[in-house]
Length: 331
Ligand SMILES: [Ca+2]
Ligand SMILES: [Ca+2]
Ligand SMILES: [Ca+2]
Ligand SMILES: [Ca+2]
Image (cartoon, rainbow, N blue to C red; front, side, top):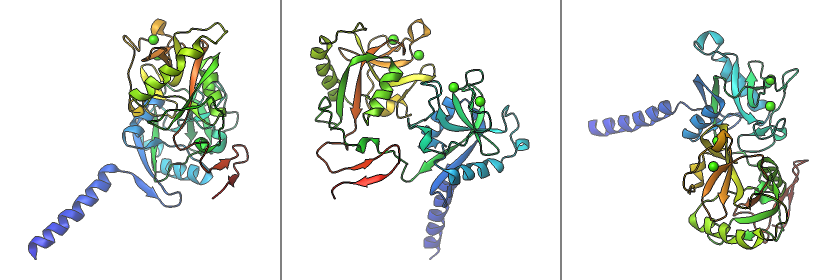
């Protein structure tokens, strides 16, 4: 009897300790776990810190979630944040690093589908502000990415997805890679990196990332014949891909806001990344394979990808991105 009781206490104790160590608190009204980080960090470091905890830098979808963040922040008044140079500010997971004035979440979605109640006069891009934050009032602002600011990480059971990949895309230039079931399209009209990224989004996908050796070989094979069909003047040795170190020099993220290693396969070309002339912040692959960092503003061919669950022969829901109306097709 005694042994059974001790065992029970140990099990119960273990469970409690795990919950405490994790420090994520569940808010049933929004079905999200949050954790306040009292140590102020630069915006890109805050992303990485959340990522390491299997969470994302908090970005409210709506006013209810914004109020929860505001209330959590209120539990840490300025007087309790000693050593915080910006104690009335809270990082949020949005930015306009890629393109001035185009505000995206860390995961790459336009913030027009998220909470975006700006403080009066904001965004003002004062002193080139490209990262998102919230005032104690709950209103948002663009702010300098290099500033040290406290933040909240969030963890959702079912993370919000725009389901961009579920949009029907019948563009036959997308070729199916048989192992990953992803589809890739080589764009033959060279564009700077940010325009390439936008074009892939408009096609319901994203700038491509390589997840395996098979995918790398597949892309290399696709490059060779079209390369000679392009009449424009451009650098023929590189193809833009969906990663960058625009948030912080030397720290590479994919366009989904995750660390590059999260792709599952990272093979840099020899001697890369080298941030040549201190001006290489956008991802490319060599036409012969291997990754390289490259200047963002030079026009290159680029690969878009559609994820495995978007196949033109499946039955789909179409999301009208502008009205956010869900239309069901088929059963
Ligand atoms: Ca800006
Ligand atoms: Ca501002
Ligand atoms: Ca760089
Ligand atoms: Ca390079």
